[in-house]
Image 1: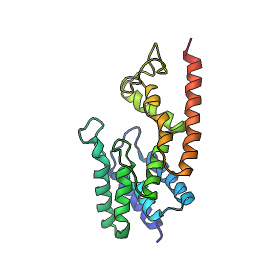
Image 2: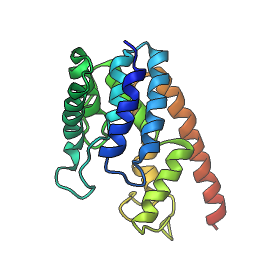
Image 3: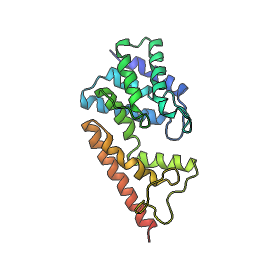
Image 4: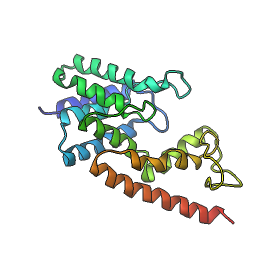
Length: 211
């Protein structure tokens, strides 16, 4: 099956339906799709599952402070499959696409059970790492008026990280831990490279702000 004729429809749909914010915009989707395609090819996964799931994974999300925030990926998966049915996408892939979208979410904390779901989750998590990960983190924190770091202990040497208060704390609370959560060998290699970049960034920052 040629996916080209469907990808234009995926792009139109996600642009219209996703609730965009600084960390989750159309460029985020494009990066996830690009990474997912690369991982899919390397790992020998089913692209008819991976590609639509990557395109549509953020077609719905509750606001960050919503009580159902952790269920966003379930709603997104339901919405995506309904759309795929409307455009006559082959229905034999619906269950696997649904699972891949449900499990992509970090906050949902659902274990992916297929290679295709692992790839979509890996691609989404890789976008929180490296140069783009540093940039997204700072963008979001700035929009929430969070200071860059704790005045006395910028790098959480003697205190618990609290990323609800400080930007740099998010590296220690979540970002530096992502490398250990990816599944595929290709993603592990890329996550390690991107994590090294973030560690170098923190090292440089430390040299500039520490006494």
